[in-house]
Length: 356
Ligand SMILES: [Zn+2]
Image 1 (spheres, helix red, strand yellow):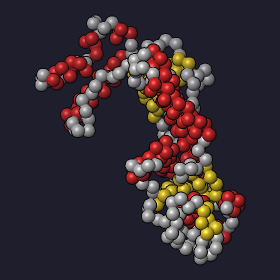
Image 2 (cartoon, protein in one colour; image 1 turned 90 degrees about the horizontal axis):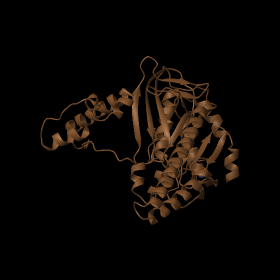
Image 3 (cartoon, protein in one colour; image 1 turned 120 degrees about the vertical axis):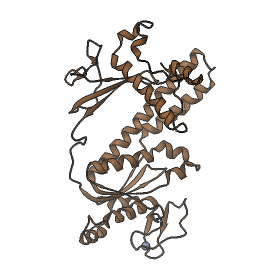
Image 4 (cartoon, helix red, strand yellow; image 1 turned 180 degrees about the horizontal axis):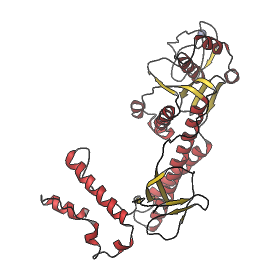
């Protein structure tokens, strides 16, 4: 269908709109597959052309897929043609008589609308099930802390302060090790002769490691953002200019650390669970302000990890001080009364004292 459309396009003829049924005699295997798979491809193809004619700059002409790219098909649920047996971990799909054994990540309620079955380029199969549900949230828990301030960093993933003190979240060890292995596999792959059997083997190993890192990082970011949202009513982060920073020398570590993903997860989870998510103006001097007396240290350089406040004499660990300032911003919100603010300000932060 794509070929026919492209040929007509090249000859400046009218783009034909055929259906997959037309090809069933010529290609008998089309009779064996789920008809929704064919139908969805036709719809997607037509949408791709429509989009292109609507906006040629944004939507390029559709191309043929490479065989090594991700492969997938979409099928729809009609009269329970798609079912999940949670007890036996089986997924029932149209045209496949027996249930397919699956590794189920979680149970769900609601009506199954469609399923996308895909094979990634590391050779794994996934089924993504679209479900219509009243409420996508997990159980909403009562927040234990009024607010928290988060300072994102390169060396440590984040420094967080809330009612219970300050703590650092390190980059998970398995991610650091995984990235090291990824770099090794990349070097290994680039040394292989293009198109050789060994090169294909190396490519597959590299793709597997890539997939592992992506999944592991997402898992870490999902769990951390969920824990933060569960624990705090107001979450304050600095509005770091991710795009601007991406152009700088730090680009690699920032894109690797998943900051922007982390912030987007915090944002939508805050909406879901009725929390307040604040991204503070990036000109707010969270690192330069002394959290004890409010003195602004204009001389603070980027490499200063600790500093002593000339006004009150307190010693600060840079990122902890920044997260405390962000935390105070969070407390200043109308959700918190001034009395509570004063109470919290007088509390000591045991974790912080240890770090200092
Ligand atoms: Zn001070």
